[in-house]
Amino acid sequence: MRKLNTRFQPVITLLARLTLGGVLLVAGGLKVFKPTESANAVAAYKLLPTDLAHLIGYALPWLEVAIGLLLILGFMVRPAAVLSGLIMVVFIGAIASVWARGMLIDCGCFGGGGEIDPSLASEVRMNYFIEIMRDLGLALAALYLYFFPYGKLSIEKAAPSTKE
Amino acid sequence: MAKQQVKSGDNVTRWIVIAMVLLVVATGVFFSMMSQNDKENASLAALGGMKLKPAVTSTVDPDNGSAIVFNAGLPKVIDIWEDPQCPVCKNFEDAFGEYIDTLVREKKATVRFHVLSFLGDESVRAANASFCAADEGQYLDFHKALYAVQSPLENSGFWSNETLIKIGEKIGINSEKFTKCVNDGEKVDVVKANYDSMSKFGVQGTPTVFINGKLWERTSPNFDLGEFSAAVEAN
Image (cartoon, rainbow over the protein chains, first blue to last red):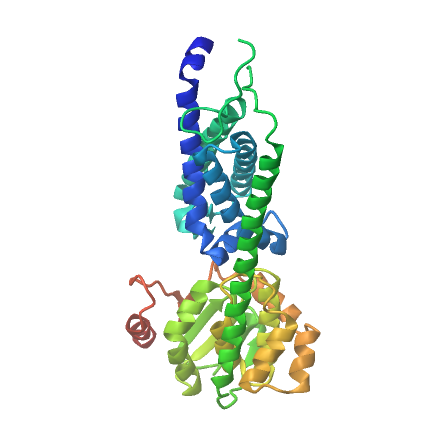
């Protein structure tokens, strides 16, 4: 296993970077010019005071774009991975919380957001599950990048290894 | 797991990048907030062109969820359940507002407006102000003005008492009584009674419309005036 990892690590790192960075870039990019929608979407989780929720709704898309770009370019990968991992954990917690409270909302992950009418209840709950699984996968990619931030096609290169 | 080693000596670059990321985020937040405020102020300014129509008196009916009732006692009864902040209610108003206005003014139907407030503080304030306007006989126009300036962002801070009084002023409600009623939240009990009556009438969302007690369900994807007026006239 370790040997396999040593051999393919640069490629795995590249794939993890492109997947995580790509999702963040797309998610952020779709929301960045719809600030109102994004602010409403965060407020719809009813987890934070309204003003703070709106502020986060304005900031989050830009942050996602910035982290996404860093990951794709391969620059400051470790800090970017830590940050995106934390964001994913927050997303998972937020979705689990609305699910547990029996609320029916659109996660607003890729734009949209807000309440959904009860006729779509089962579909919405299925979406919560899929979203949590997706974010869990992305969090694992972030974890891998924390340990192995340097791979192929990266601006930053690993320091020459001193031991091995 | 053995962590890959970080190259040392590029701390300066690191801080520059972190600063740049923060700058991008801060700039984005700033422009997002500005554009939001601009939209709200522009819609408020546009209200200046609205002329107040003649007053129509209404009553508050405790037996029907403390709704605002026009033309009580006619054979045709329309119940409209709305939250002033609900975006779909704005679409509803844009499509059917004029028609419903006519029904009320020409006394063709009893119309009961249930002013809900489940979307937060600003709905409560706007609902309170709506009942204050109803006391002046100006609910219809105030209601129309509220939807005309409705912010796309719920609870954005736009519908403060100050703004609600200003909306009144713009369309010609200038009485001291209205100002006091809005500022003191004189109608919050009635507002709460409206909200509390939702479950009794089986209302789960807004806008909900009953025509002669029967739930109106649209078949067209958008609010179609032909479909709605046909349903009203059929019953």
